[in-house]
Image (cartoon, one colour):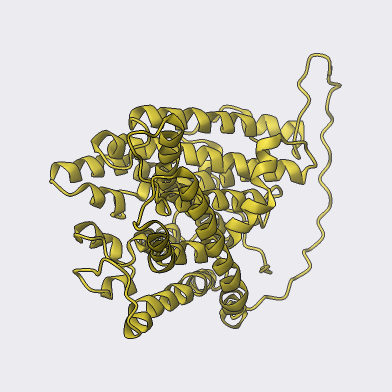
Length: 455
């Protein structure tokens, strides 16, 4: 099979989707809720405190949302650039400069410099730190009795392994093959988790192994391939409200199936993870469509306005540094101060727990803000030195305009008014039943590559 040629961006595609920044901000907020929880329920506490404790616990689903977002955004970017000169090198350069420098700086700080000064993170690893440097910690942390000094780095290892393998799989696959491969991975993940349970692996292994969490990344990739195919086939809109309702419905089914969003457990990990993944996919699709609707000056409801709020956008912008540093800040600064204040690492007072969460989260945001301006953004500015140079744009040859077909008058009282940016004839061709085995957009060849690229 020949390598696919680069496809031009669809007319409805947006280079930046602000609502996805809001979803990323929501994901990091959920992670902070889970990992900064210091509330210790007492028997005299009522339902309000129990509900607050349950809200803290639910924050673990933020990682699942991160995985779906990564699968969608990475696949979306690869589909728009593959086939161009240096597309794989450009992808690797962007990922390396975005992920590696801050990650390795944090490892140097927390595993080398601070220990040399007598400040050590709790729970030293029984397997050493080499796995952290190689982005393989998710394969050993489940077997570490104490979880290691940086247990939250497991999710970064999963994403980095995905970044290295996924472009190679997409290189020679068409949209149909990408879509089918993604769906196959989504379907295979719960079966793999079932097999792992049968082999007696610990529950944390099902939670952290790449092969058992691949359904979230693959589901985001399937959404990107499906949206790309619809755009190339002429469809310009989905029903955003339908996706929002579907996401809420699937979230409710996840709660029922996993008995209240349990993170570990047989039923929760076999089918609950997949239901949660599908819910996150619906929310990502809804957020994407909200941005496209706003680009057409359409009015959106309050959920969309909340998603594009400045608070969530700011959290999303600095989410990477917040995620990297929040657990060490909690262990090295937050808990010692709380221990000095209350005499313990936990508190039975919900007000103190909320105050601790707010102050620590604000400190993590400040670190993320500083990291972005002082370190991350200057490092990202180095991309232009290694990215493939722009090719000079060539003026396309002018072709005579095709003759417009003679259309019969349409009775608008009985005919549907076409919506979007395609005319009625194109919409009818897209909706017409195909005689092939697969839908037309799945088997259509990719358009020729453009002569110039944009950054």
